Amino acid sequence: EAGVAQSPRYKIIEKRQSVAFWCNPISGHATLYWYQQILGQGPKLLIQFQNNGVVDDSQLPKDRFSAERLKGVDSTLKIQPAKLEDSAVYLCASSRDRGNEKLFFGSGTQLSVL
Amino acid sequence: AQSVAQPEDQVNVAEGNPLTVKCTYSVSGNPYLFWYVQYPNRGLQFLLKYITGDNLVKGSYGFEAEFNKSQTSFHLKKPSALVSDSALYFCAVRDGAGNMLTFGGGTRLMVKP
Image (cartoon, rainbow over all chains, first blue to last red; front, side, top):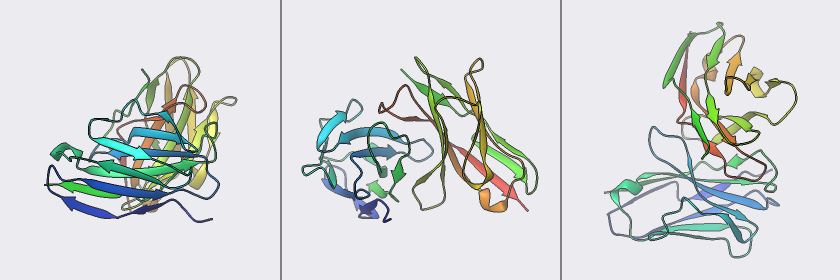
């Protein structure tokens, strides 16, 4: 089966600019996750969707980050405006449903904010 | 709040020797425990999980992990390391099915020929 697709692979922007990342999960997977992985740290969950509804966004900085999964399939994560500390790899993952323990991860988008 | 600690930033082992990557956790209720591996420029890949049952769980690529409730640990092990096992390993925990998965900071495993 095809894996989790993410684009772009790399993105360089200046602080205060906006940026968007796209994710297409594995076909049929109801649950979609966005993680932020800062260099040298483990992934941190930003938001979790079940179909097109938000399950957990407690760690999402809502003043600048937003995410949507309108049709319950692909998803977009946006940062506006970006800060230097947002430099990280943004990982998208999916699983068959909330109760399924195995997450499948995409290769990530590496964001550099200058 | 749940948390995971991986006390070693890096583990070095010679090829053919056994390896252990340590993980301790803190969670309310029964833990759901996982190990993931990250190769350079690739996403994380699932290795194994403990939900309930036998304390020794077996996973992909010959890895296994031992759940110890009294020590709140879930150490990753392999009897004989390969150079190709060199990667970044992450331990993760959730406090129930469907709840937030929390990752540790990762341990880099270096296997030398």
